[in-house]
Image 1 (tube, one colour):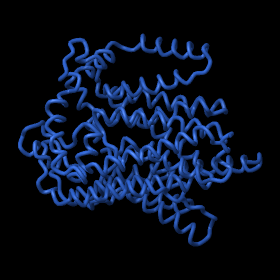
Image 2 (cartoon, rainbow, N blue to C red):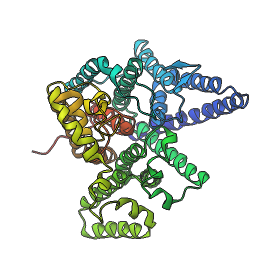
Image 3 (spheres, rainbow, N blue to C red):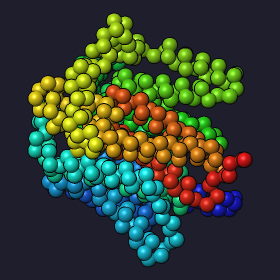
Image 4 (cartoon, rainbow, N blue to C red):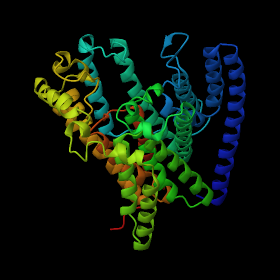
Length: 479
């Protein structure tokens, strides 16, 4: 890329940011007045319409805004509906506006847009998910009703699947933006989203007067973030995936100020993960830092990084170590697994043989035989992503999901080695570590279908597909 084109791109990016800031402030001011007049739904609708105009000016603005909003989309921080209409919410409005803007730009030849073809493994993966929904929708009426959740209906079931499809559609949108030369804006939007999330969580802890020592216990710490609409474990994974991606991206960035800003954003993501007091989040942080230390080629740098990590660990309050070591000193299996082994996993494993080929359907734990019979803890998911895939999609699903994520790993690995841009190599190197965090987290929680905590990983997969299909992005491996 020439110097002039680089400067032109930088000027265009600065101009877009200024326009977004100006219109965003305008929307916030007018929306704030409407909210003050006790019309919050109208305020949100107004803001959505203002941002829709920004999106129609350039579909890339829509992808940027959706990226910024995606980590919050499944929380209570973003309304699920407006005027009592299910599905009418700010996120969906922006998503539809972005798609329309993209297709309009392509149809009316406002610019030459290169679309991205999705790999066969991706479509097979989507097909297995769809089959699981078709199988499961007939069993929804049998699902157990949990005290803290609304009764599961066919409409809610299908809408939840639709959310997964929207996340996959955003993957494709990110791929289109990436192939057409603006993928870095998505990384910066993710960085901004994680900083915002950190301020939300930290601000809540400060205003509510919650101490770190109080969070270390096994009681309140498991529910203190429920007001967000996500469990602490989910927020921990969401933050760790961001940390895993942003840390190597920052270190691979040559511009000093950009590197410093990205490092600060990575630190905000890591702090958010730590503040969840999720033991899975602690393990994820250890994996990310351990991976970074392991990859140091210089012994001096290796010792320096290791020393810095040790100093930070020594300065941490005792509350973190108390939470991380629950059950380890006494060897209490129930405390270590939080009762998952005897009261969830073992009762569920036997149900695999009831439908070993294609499974029981998406989210089948809610109508699993031991759950309906009261022979296990009443839960909505198996707290083990591997077991969830086996029960929901059967042997076919296990093979397809494993093959798909192996293909994702190969894509990240290839780009982390052969991309011509060091910063992009850093992004995809971080994505490999994020996949490892997802795999380890899956042992005790989560799922391997699109979910809010994976938002950054799916977006980066889209960026990878776009970069892989861009001319001049990949250097040929040396024979």
